[in-house]
Length: 95
Image 1 (spheres, helix red, strand yellow):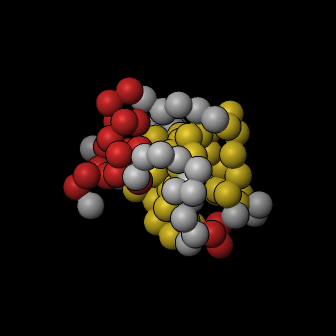
Image 2 (cartoon, helix red, strand yellow):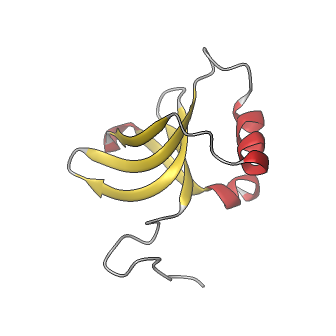
């Protein structure tokens, strides 16, 4: 349902698993909670860094879609000025 908010009073993406692309090489997959003055707050976050991960970004996302998010961070704040794009995980292949 377009425009449906999972929890009234929160952002549209609240509670949705998203892929956050950064201005650098890092990629994060986690449950969107909110945007605060400190940055974007995500829960149960998996992190992909090409210098430390054997998988490509697309392989990492495909594995996550198939097996679920392997959370490395229970709570994670990413400064908003480092965010390039936020995509719902289920829409990743459609972008």
